[in-house]
Structure formats: C-alpha cells, structure tokens
Length: 448
Image (cartoon, rainbow, N blue to C red):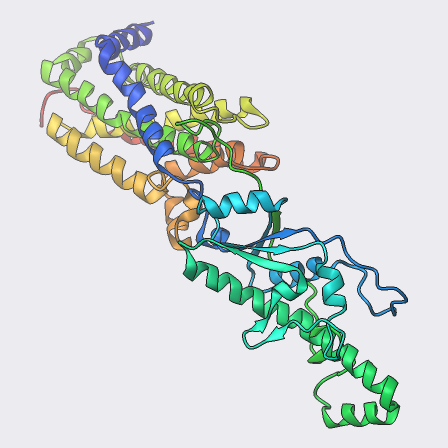
C-alpha cells in the first residue's frame, strides 16, 4: 500500500539519527531521575495530609478492682486518640514503637511525637482531686509525665512541636478533667449525702456534674463520626541514592510520560516543515494519494514513535526506579495507546498549520508548556492544584491521561475501570478531533 510506503519513508527520516532518538527517549528519564532524587518523602501529599499528630501507644489498658460500670473498659490512650482524630479533622498517625519515633525525631521527619506509656490507663483512672490520687493538673494544663506519657520533640522544629503540644493539651484536658470532676462529685455524694450532691447540681444546672466525658459534662451531643483518618505509620519505601521503589515514582513517571508524549509536537512539526521546504509535500499531489491517506501515512510513524516512548518510560520506571505497574498492568496499554493518539493528533495539527521552523518552535513550545502547566504535569499530581484549576485542566488531554495513570499506578485500592474507560474515550476524542482539524488545515503546496 502507498500509505505504508509513505509511512516507512517517514520512519526512516525519524530514526536516521540514532543519537537524536536516544536523546528523545532519555530526556524524560533524566528529568524523572533528577526530580526523584531531589524531592522529599512528602512529595505528592497535600498540606492537609501532612498536618498530623503522631503518637506511640504502649498502653495495654487497666481494670480497676471493683470498678463501677461507668469506668471505661477501653484503654485511655484509645480515648485520647479518638478525641485527637475528632479535633478539627487532624489526622492521627500511630507509630508502632518508641524506637521508630525517636529515629523519626532525630532525622527531623517529625516535629513531635506523643508517647503513651504502659501505665497511662492506670494513672488516668486514678486521677483525682483528693489526697492519694494522681493529680496531673498544673499551670499550663495537664502534666502528662504524671500520667506516664511524654512528648518527644525535635529541637530544630520547636514551633511545630509547640503547636502539636498545645493540641495534645486541649485533648488531655477534655479527657482527664471531666473524669476527675465526675469522680469527685461521686465522692461528695458518698461522704456528704445525696442532698448536698443534688444541691450542687441545682447550683450548676448548665453542667452535668455526674458526666465523666466532656460532652456529658457540658451537656453537649457527642460526635457520632470518627473524625479524621487514624493511620499506622509505614516507613517510606525506597532505598539507595535513587530511592528505588519510592512512592514518588508512581507520580513522576506517568506525569512526565504524558508531558513528553506531547513534546513530540516539535519533532513532527520540524519534519513537516522540512518536507514542505524541500517540496516533498507538493510532489505528493502528483501521487495517487488522497489528503486523508497522506495524513495517515504521516501519522503512523510518529504514532509508533510515541508508543515506543511511552512503553520505554514505563519499562524504565519498572527497571530503574522499581515502580509498580499496579494490580492490572495490561490496562496501561490502552492508556498509552490513546495518549499517543491524542499527542500525535495535536502534533499533526501544529505541523499542518506551521510554515517554518520558527513557527513550529513558537506554536509547539508554547502549546506544550502551557498545556503541561494547566493539566498538572509539571506539578506531578493534579490533586495538589486548586479546585478551579483541576476543573480547568479537564479541557486538556493531559489531565485525562494523568487521571487514568493515577487510577492504575497510585491508587491503593482497586482501579476504577469506569474512570479509566472514560479517560481513554476522551483521549480518543481529542486525537480524532485534532486529526480532523489537521486534515482541514493541511496544505500540500509550499505557499506561506
């Protein structure tokens, strides 16, 4: 077929300089390498995700001999943890051991960690205003050391550590103070009789002095929700200089795979301009080829090159950076295919409009960089963008490709096949639309 003859001729033109092809494949890999080494473990996290209270829970609980039914059977550390999670949506992170917490503090990865010792529940249960009880209250709130708890601090992050300490103090007061008031009120009734206890309750009608929780004491409705997420700390993946296996590569590899797929706009544009200047396109008018066949013959070699680049980067991501291909690797193929189709459609559109190398450089570079910025490719993760920009980014094919890759590579659960199929459909629509516009605007003569 003449289409294949034309395609093979253009493929020879594309690969006649092996060094240029290698640079084309290696350039995005170098970008990923530099960013992967440079970025920290917090890359890809929103500020809200990094706002957390880290705790170490060594509290096994405590059963008071002859305890009344209102004595909590849940360890007090768990009660504090739940209150922290319900405080302004702050995420609670549980670190398994104190040794890990100390290492994180020493490395500067945590500003402060709240540690609950093995006698925490016993000390809280025995907290009392009466002699012989544990009195943890002092000028600044709750002296947590009296309750077998302490705060590990990073001396280089004192501001952040102080904020964490104050959040912990508020929670400790909400948990410990109502418990102490409620038990003291019981003792008053036991020693002075029910008349005095009822009289005190009547003097303070806005409070339930029998309540042993903050909600009960203040006659408030307890929160029904569990608050923010309580997560178990996991040591960041990745090792060696490249941090192979680090989560950041699940974001960086697809982001720059998408961005550099559209960088081929420049390569295709320069190829068209060179042929137009040499008169090759004009001579094709004498061949028994329609405009559609010429466009298809030009599209195929560029499309195969884009496919090769996408598959190469995903393969290099696996081999060099130890990234995961997700639970269903075969689903990456339609995403690569449709991304390449939309990228090459855009490339043909620019090539059909541009009349000189300067125009290709201006149109192509501006289009590629602006779309990469709007879509979130440059940032790596669209979720880090403001909500209005996330909506605006959906007008770019890049954003749909990133969404599909995120479902497959950065989704801890099962990929949403509906979203992936929708993304591939939209990318196909972009590609076909660009090709139709390229066909409409293509001129085979050398006129400017």
